[in-house]
Image 1 (tube, helix red, strand yellow):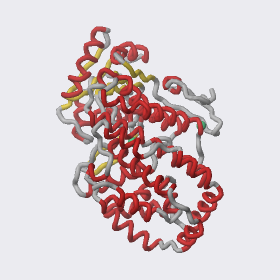
Image 2 (cartoon, protein in one colour):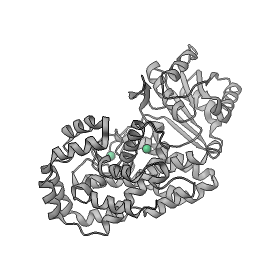
Image 3 (cartoon, protein in one colour):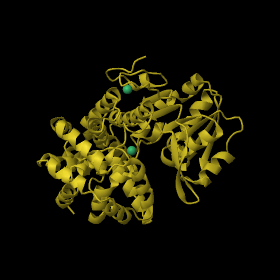
Length: 450
Ligand SMILES: [Zn+2]
Ligand SMILES: [Zn+2]
């Protein structure tokens, strides 16, 4: 079947092989998504339909009370065999995986993660390693990782990414989601609003570097995020319909990543900002705010940078002169200062990716100059930074770096160097190509309230 030309309901994208005018085939292995009021009630029927006979519910004391207890009642009433474990320790670590293994019923054929965050990630890993599929019953929707196929674990106190597996199904009961704490709701919204800048990055890359692009996937994610932004003011009243839309948007972006085969549809420069903060905070032994909250602040910063760019005349000849004068040795020194112990990995990545070399940059500048009108139109189509700030503020969520413990010096390093964490082409790399990253970063930093 061909991937739909206009967005369809989420369920139509699941477990179906698509051809696409973009030239690629798309497939998302997730089999079922149930989001809505009373969605929890669908658990017994869904597991029967999927053919599972012995369930292993994984919760902790909090998520057991929120949803685990009710899941067990529903399953028992429907005659589905199920055991539940309440984790005594919930972390991204060996101890949690050990607990999962110790309490697993020998005949279990489906794990059910009741929760988000560590419960979901550790079940995802456990599921992959034991060869038993899993299903997620979400108790909150703070990020878009539901359909992810990797899990991060602290092994020997080192954060390591492992292969894992996506769930067979996701259940999001809006009655439960609407009771989630504001910071969780705001984080989910922040992660979702970051798709504006991330999709813009992809469109820019298509024009500037000729990167492969799937118009239909972009449109799917974009429509969804636009409708959530329009309804965002109602999130503060815990409107279950809006919270359901946010959760569905987060699952949908996860599905979009599956369909495309990598994170291009869901992660751009706003995520590079978050990855950089995550790393620096870890080096400093500080605890960062949730991922989605960082992405929300990152999105605001990127929008401010693009607004500053649109106010300026771009001088392509000056940019070409800067490209010719590029000094890799100085770049390496800057990276060592900005990345500390992580610098060598970043330098090695540049060795493979050559994001900054003169020849590539000159070619990109030619493409930009030839298509500058089109690029400006893309940037002008982004939502104003003020609108995103307002949506975040209405949920008492941070929208400036100072509010999340990022001071001006760290912010400057972030804007100038976070683009180096991945090889992906983004707005930040475009500003650097234009030799405008530093002045625009300083302008935006100067404009922020303390
Ligand atoms: Zn994210
Ligand atoms: Zn496609």
